[in-house]
Length: 611
Ligand code: AGP
Image 1 (cartoon, helix red, strand yellow):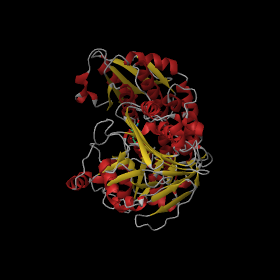
Image 2 (cartoon, helix red, strand yellow; image 1 turned 90 degrees about the vertical axis):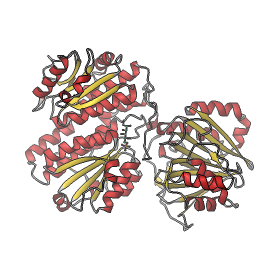
Image 3 (tube, protein in one colour; image 1 turned 180 degrees about the vertical axis):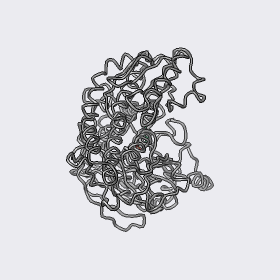
Image 4 (cartoon, helix red, strand yellow; image 1 turned 30 degrees about the horizontal axis):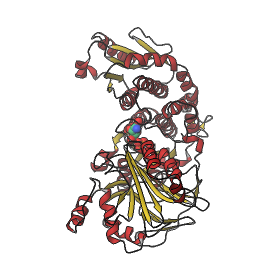
């Protein structure tokens, strides 16, 4: 939701902090700010807009010589939750004395109560944010020991936070704390950093410490001390970061999204590597941590997730029921956590999340654990909170996904769900012969994706048909229904076209009233038992003047379509991945033609760590 970073060391803090903010900008980018320690003073600069605006303001405000002297600082890039994106609402926020600065990711849920109490004591708030209530509360408790003041303030806080705090009277010290919002510490040579995620640290160190909820860390140039809120010391391992610095660069592509779309043959190859037993026609997923007996005792699978991850779960539902004949369902994570879900020890709950930090999905994990279910994570970011709190599951190995619009995470999630369904199926009724056939098709996914990527130019031409419109529909049946939803989500979130995904049979039950001559309707008509029905639905749209854009198999009929995108012939479950790649490219080219900010769309953030 927001990105925070702190640096304490011997180098100039400004370039380290700005570089870190640029890596974190995908988490939120409506305003940004920085605080530097200069002797016994704190200097603050804030700006509305992206990090580049803050950088301009810093160069106008602080001389290079001054910046060179300041080796301790904190910084923040914001996705607004309380109060509009203005300079007054931008972080860092200060206490009444103006001698304590704080940056925050998360939501202080009882901030109004805290604010009222402080205003009754004479505080005059200068922003609309929840964060200012916390910064002022820390100041209230500050008596010369910043860590103690922070812990006393946090005892009064309800909600989620990842914070970094500095005090003018304690040079060379940063206090960091997390509860519900991620924080990772980087341990360098004579320097320490703290950030919302590891992508901001990888240019400086590969030695990292993942903080857990309730941890409070005191950072100095040469030391990190971690305690709990009662000051009891806590030991945390120093891990080696797997991330490569190059992995968070664009690599010659115009946008991270295009890079990540084209990475999918490799990212899916990584997701499959070492996980297919081609002899037995099954999958090898040691991360599931389950015995054959535990697998056999699973009576139902419930997948929880949000957005694209929810759509991946919807594909998984078809895979589990078809290949493993296990009753399966998908629940939007925010619903699951509040509906008092009917799950028990015979159920497997799979939390699907690229970031591993989505607040609603994390809360669903905690609710499922309370109900005694078996819980697993299907996560991309190693060491993320969901990965650690589920304790078992399957990593996607897709590499960092920087673009806000999720692409390679989706295809990685679906690929792993197919593997899980294959494994569960072979532990039950799926024959070795069918298992082998499915395993071979899954194994060929990188080549199937490459076949779609090779049509990039043709898809760009189809995009020109959609780009002038403000409304579009995506239709599919069976496992292609969630792919239609995903295609619509991609288009709406990066091109701002109002796109709706519908079950192909559903359109005539009302939404078809919206069709006007020329409305683009994307129909996923791959080879499947219901392809004729889908083509009939496409005819119904065409009869009302719609422009039909059909995704059809290499050998399929395209008579109904005004525009055709060919996808490889393969099992309908497996075909969901090449179809999704085609729709990702389609959305990308439409957004590019419309001149949109593809990697950082308006109003969005990469990781939604608040409710
Ligand atoms: C996908 O394009 C969106 N950016 C968004 O829906 C995302 O999938 C959702 O917020 C879930 O994120 P997660 O996978 O990190 O939990």
